Amino acid sequence: MDNRKYNIYFHTHTISGIIICALLYVIFFAGSFSFFKEEISAWQKNNSYVKSRKTLTRDFDKVIDSLGQKTNLKGRDFDFFIQRNDVGAYVSMTASADTTLKKKPKPKPEGEPKKRRGRGRGGDDDSMYFNYDFSKQKSGDYSEAYDMGEFLYRLHFLAQLNAVPIRLGAPFGYLLAGVVSFIFLFALVTGLMLHWNKIVSNFFTFRPWSKWKTLWTDLHTAIGVIGFPFQLVFAVTGVVLIANVFLVGPYTKYLYKGDSAAIYQDLEYSDTTKYVYSYQPLQKTFQVNEFVEKIEDKWSHSRITGVTIKNYGDANMHVIVAAKPRANKSFSGTGKLVYRVRDNKILTEVSPVKSSSYVDKIKSTIYHLHFGDFGGKPLRIIFFVLGVMGCLVIISGILIWLVARDKNNVPKHKRVFNFWTANIFMASCLSMLPVTALTMLSLLFIDKPDQSAIYHIYFYSWLVLSLYFIARRSIRTTNHQTLILSAIFCLLLPLADGFKRNNWLWTTFNEGKFDILFIDLLFLILSILSVVVLFKMKQHEKLKVAEK
Image (tube, rainbow, N blue to C red; front, side):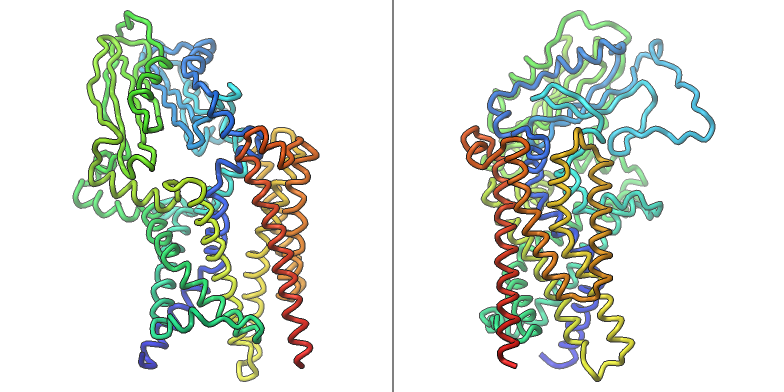
């Protein structure tokens, strides 16, 4: 490779990597833990989804009946969005389509902000949106049902930054995550081209006892090559999933004449079919549970993802059931059944395992590759390890960048800027593991922790710890002390779970609470690894001192 091309690849790779490294680390770190979103949720709530699923009966009728005790349900639409753990659901109830029953909106005091429901869903005073736990038969709003699994999942696409009042066609957090994913593609491709000529020799070269720059360079190259396919897949799928608003925008404007509903209908993201309200009562009783159970038996190799009821109690009442095939039966597919209640007629039936459209194949491929949900827990563990390796690539890249520029021929003001840049990045990034463990540990001792509690503990402790390490002005101290804190907090997590809730490793194993057991084991292993890495770093430093 000639020098011109090498310099282009080198500088493009370096600049693109440095610009996004801190945010990319957050995305990779939170995304790695998001593979175990359901396990983390089960651990925090002390409610094993693995155990609950064996005896669980989802009682849709009970939810509807309980709502009927508070308000007239005639003419309302219900949506049950079944969560991936199959134990909980997001439930939406609209205002009645019957104009004779609609309540007039209550006047609000001047200056009072509009009430928001759930994840930003608005509505009048007659609609509802809440979370329902079928295993505990308990409901709560989105904030009350919020947990660390949801927090880390949303952090991995920077959803918390949507509160920033900047909107350029999409919420700020989503926009920023999409931009980071797109720039990450440049960093990956230019990094591959940079090492292309010596990719084999560099991959098999690792000198752990050499000087720090050599060690970090070898680590960066070796782990980067191993994780390249994984990181490329995540960069591409991340751009599609997060930045789809920008990808769809031009097609909406020029091909669909601005009709966004039509394009999302064709992309199978929504169904805009209208079901007219007849103002005639339904002349029969209908049990949602019984109907859904029949569909589950019929589509035994799939899981129900949603149940929608249109025009409840009306003669034109319809029930729509959506399903997805289990990954071991079909990699793509979407099941849909539309049922008219008054005459027991199935208007539409699409099996989730027998057929799938081109659009569905593309969507399913992107979704499965990004979430790693097609190979069970072993695959998710592999994805977790590869995600952590991505974090190591980012950290080693920052250190290589700093060491390469910490030379006497570089002007002092530039060296100071480079150090403070790396110091801030390292303090912010390496604080995430101890802060995550500390937050989960704290939640054990809070009665009914909600979204606000998680936000306050996580972000304030992250800020304090980051500022502390930044003020220390020593990357070596940051490395060592974050490892010590990680080892302590990660070890305390399973111990506190045992003392506080009697969830000792052997107890959860014997009771079949394998999701809770997994999280305790995960943090125990992370604690041990932190001690091992700290010991190896100390050993490396002693060897360097002895050589001098």
